[in-house]
Amino acid sequence: MSTINTAIVNPDSKHGSNEALGQGQPARSAQHKNYKGFVAGVFSGIAKLSVGHPFDTIKVRLQTSDKVQFKGPIDCLLQTVRKESVRGLYKGATPPLIGWMFMDSIMLGSLTFYRRVLQENVFSSASLLAVREASSNKLEQFSTEASKKLPTIGHALAGIMAGATVSFIAAPVEHIKARLQVQYAAEKSKRLYSGPIDCVTKIFRAHGIPGVYHGLSATLLFRSFFFFWWGSYDIFTHLLSEHTSLSTPSINFWAGGLSAQIFWLTSYPSDVVKQRLMTDPLGGALNDGIRRFPRWKDAAKDIWMRDGPRGFWRGFVPCFLRAFPANAVALVAFEGVMRALPE
Image (cartoon, rainbow, N blue to C red; front, side):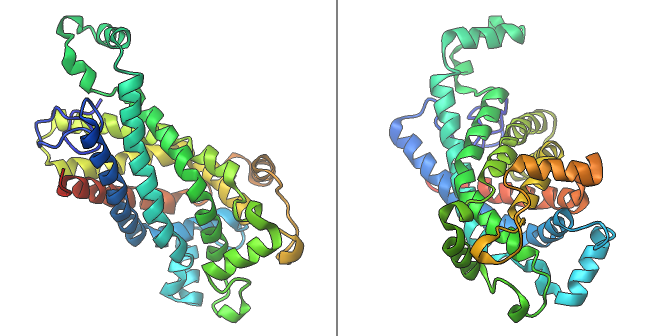
């Protein structure tokens, strides 16, 4: 478990003086920290978009295109810039610009909340604490200090819960973003959607709320892998704080970047399925083609039949290159704002 003293980890740190979120604090303090988590999440979303969106555009295009269209990430990048200019790399940026501020705010704010709930209602009982202490052969050191620490499994479970919560915001944002990103025409007049508002309006008129939320089940599956992200973030934070003399922002940066790599290594195949589903024609009155994948399982089966196991890793290189800097910067921004905001 983490011992670094940041606003979203644990209180018993040698690196600072901020209190842990919801771990034995008064109700008023907990409410303030919940509020801080949501505010800091806004800045996290802005930082992530600024660094990561061009990588994301290349990733989505590779995930949803035929193998003959692009030879690889470099070819996709060059073709996009040549045909659509640098602005083509930022197609679909408006939904996440707005959406990620809310998404990161909700995800990190709810993560903070679920950590406190789990700590207070699941991992604070005497029996669980005894088991945890015995399993680490430190029963003689058992004390009330143990109740202030959320174990790694608690951080991981909070990650799943936060992922499920934010999915209901993320699904329509990522759906609209993906459809805009795979419009290859340089001239707006030749595109089906002129922008995010037009995209949402047309889909809603043709298919209602279910159309806007197309891909929700795949989004929930994808974000269940937050288990590995936030579990590994806690582990990396603990290791770096114990075995290095790095400053708190540096620990946040490295732990955030490394844990993001773990997340993508475990979740990437589900992201490919999600993107295929979200860019599949909806059909009907929208007149965008014939729907091929009614469910995420159909998209997964199609990928397997067409490309085998390698199909689930198409576009992984730009994703992996994006994951460390984008998420590291986002977590540095989040932690920095959490520490800067008044108690």
